[in-house]
Length: 335
Image 1 (cartoon, rainbow, N blue to C red):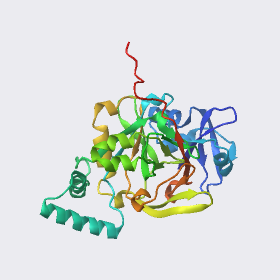
Image 2: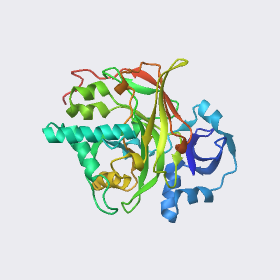
Image 3: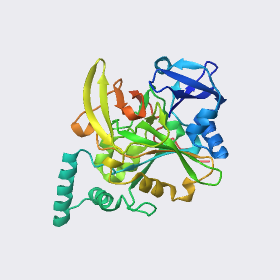
Image 4: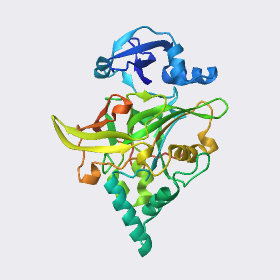
């Protein structure tokens, strides 16, 4: 099932079910968006799709017109952004078959020479132990924090980059969307397209700057795909500048293209009690192996990032915009 969040004409957040052909959206009568729908599903002991089927709503709207009007929101949010945790895992993807072969050869050579970097060593741990027997813990992935729900840009909205940033580049990724139930059980609602968006110049100065490089905005959506996810997902990432496509590249995701199972990545995120607080929302990025920055391309303000992953619905598009950070040295006041 394909779900979106939208604002109706009164400005109320509602959930919509996208038709199979992607032309129209059935708007559910219940207000509160996906958060309320998922909460009701947990209470009723139903799947998210079953809850949507059981919710009345006959109004139908044109999907393309909703996107054009900027009425489509990210597919899940918490009413209080402070109760939405946006996080991710890196060094999780194998890339193309050729890239995999080259990577394995490089890992073997560096291991024999004793020159493995910390990043490559962590990647090797994932290759060797990131897909354990179901129900068993595997190798820990790289993990990072991006921010709370306030950093998530809606589909079509500007993706803001602070003026102190050294770079602002896309990261096309699969995102898991979760709601913690009343008993502390994480519930996966489904998956969405994500642009994780990072400062790659800052990160390249030193891998210990990873945390700084990730404290940026991101974009998710437009759709939430409920139900089973194909193991092999193939999409395209583009950078548009005016009428021209200045960079375009296919990317692979899904478990068939990863060195960690989704179960393992979820375990190492939710094993922490602080990540299982009832009522909280979690938006978790699962990583990528495709970046325009890696090909020497630098995005400019006004450029539009486009991430297309057909199995997850309509593409995600967001223009890049530089904003003032709003804070300067000496800005802290002593009381």
